[in-house]
Length: 349
Image 1 (cartoon, rainbow, N blue to C red):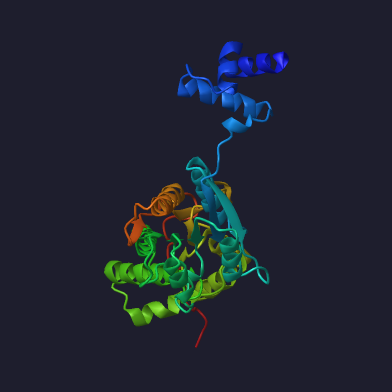
Image 2: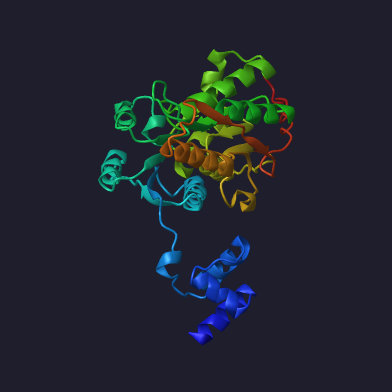
């Protein structure tokens, strides 16, 4: 034990007497020094005495659609860390095709008597889904927070990125670079974030270029989320002469870049591509991706604070909090290519 005390004291840069006071939970130690000793215990792999173990304030469910898209692990990491700092133990529920559904996860979480649930891009984002599942939770009552996907009539806090502004910012950036034929790729139109991005895209095209809605339709490709969907949709848009492409996710943007290269085109020399999310590693793709950054940390912290306030009976406001996206300009966008001159027909009639 003496050797352990010396190791802990050395790691925490305090005296052995101080370590003894902390381990025995005695007064006379500042909060900072106490935390340094506890951290030293954790780092060295020593188990904290029972009386010093932080007791969980309860379990909180975190339901995310999948982990293949890097933006969802990013949300999960910040939410789990912030919950832990608030004394709650997060329970991560990840969906996969053919696996456990959102509703099944909710039943499991209720069986474990969770204190609340945070949903990220769940069925609440699908305008065709039944909102009764959330009304039942609110009616129990169980605190819930819904991230990215507003649904009217649910008495709960909503945390959303301003998707309409994102669509507008993307188009404005491409127009400023001289692009006039700007396409939009996103997922199915039944999702609220998709509807909002499209609305911002349409408004910007009309304002900046005077393009009517009827003419915009041929430049919109709604497909499956993911690299493959982005690749197919981008190929259709390039066949229609698009020199700028706005994508509903970073993964779709990577698919668009792949489609351009399959056609022998360069990005951004021939085609400019904009993603959405600024998920990890997008700064290191080839080329580094211009994208609309979701403020993941701010959104995740706000979601946890709203939930914890609700759990503690403080009642966070029942409204939608919109967080502003940031245009991050990298190397996948550039000045629009000059119109290619078609050589005159010199053959005899």
